[in-house]
Amino acid sequence: MSSDVSRATRDANESPVVEYGARVGYAIVGVLHLLIAWIAVKVAWGIGGGSKSADQSGALGTLSTSGTGKALLWVAVVGFALLAVWNLTEAAISHGETADRVKLAAKGVMYAFFAWTSFKVVALGGGGSSEKQTEDFTATLMKSPAGQLLVGALGLVVLGIAGYHVYKGWKKTFLEDLVGHPGDWAVQAGRAGYVAKGVALAVVGVFFVVAAVKHDADKAQGLDGALKSLKDMAFGPVLLTVVALGIAAYGVYSFARARYARL
Image (tube, rainbow, N blue to C red; front, side, top):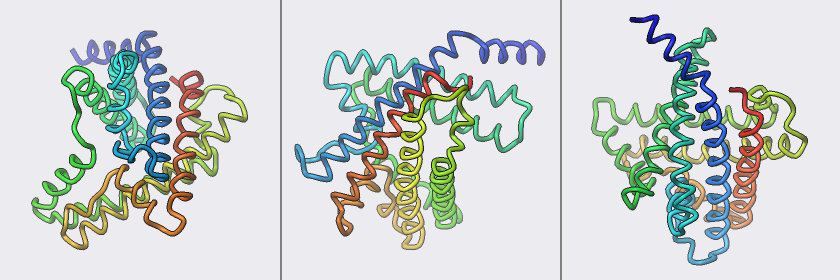
């Protein structure tokens, strides 16, 4: 029985359908990051009131407002689902380091969540606010035994991930995820994109640490809150615009990753 499961897992991992779908998923990641960047720029300069969330929920909500966007959302559901399948099966059959397998499994869960969120938006008419979900999750975690420590630890983990993104971008180690050279334009976009995402995640991590210290779940913020907080800093609109351009650059890199990803 175990050998049958192992064979089925490997077959799924090596399926051309899964590979193609995963590449489509990376392209959808690029679209969403471009939309998040545009929303962030509008927030920075008060264009259109900046009412949309500058995060995944805002990007998905923007897509849902048109027929073409809704069709793209169905593509996103499939692409994210197959990205989840590839990462989870790769984690299961890989003989690499334990840390690498855990990272693959975590990515698989993340893409499965993205697929479900996209499905809720296109099929059920809404996926909810990411910021509200962040606050509710933090409040639930805070009520558990050693809740403050858990929230603080989560903040430190996010800060660690943020630092890893900056390092990955600055040192260009993201090229190890690719097969072949995607071109100088993609390399520069990847560098700027990973560093910008690291900056945004660092702000998210700080918010979680502050929430833990103050024992206040409302202090926790997701990507939307983190980006909008940049606007309140010195030269805020300019700073937020720079980060938004970096997020857009990550979107551009994601298109190259769709073509060159090591799958």
